[in-house]
Length: 74
Image (cartoon, rainbow, N blue to C red):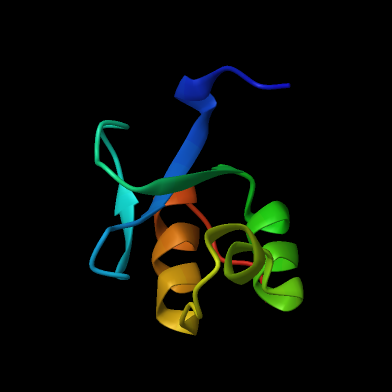
């Protein structure tokens, strides 16, 4: 298990929006992803955040996560 500082938090707000929480303090259901581009690419392929946040996510969200992770993985 990695320390929280090495993870990216994604939150489903009470308004059913999915946003990246850089501070880790937003209200709502949260899920954490590693800052590893390969992990984010796998999560995108398997739609992992859809399952954990119980809401449909967009490819743009995963693209933004890849940017935050500092790389692109296709």
